[in-house]
Length: 100
Image (tube, rainbow, N blue to C red; front, side):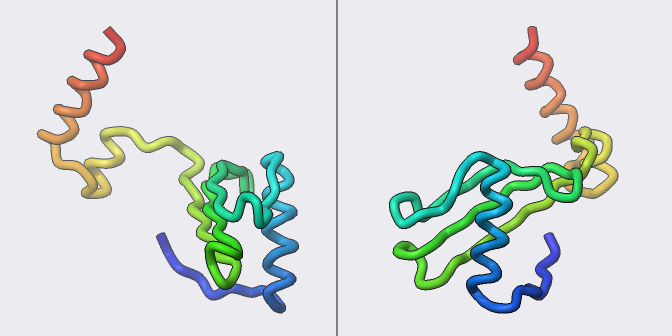
């Protein structure tokens, strides 16, 4: 994940943008439901938004995680250094048992 500087004019601009994105997912943030985690598509990529609003948080907080357009594979996890070969082999064995 790479943090970026926000480019919103003010808190109202952020809220309008978040409400617009959430409307595509068929939900809205409200004081009755101030914490949401929802899957959306941003720039044709899967993303996960976590939104925390008043009264839970004093300000609107948004965490957006933009996922790779292609699902991770065991091989790509090894190449990226996320798994070593023995961990990948273990995951593959569990996966084979789950589908058997």
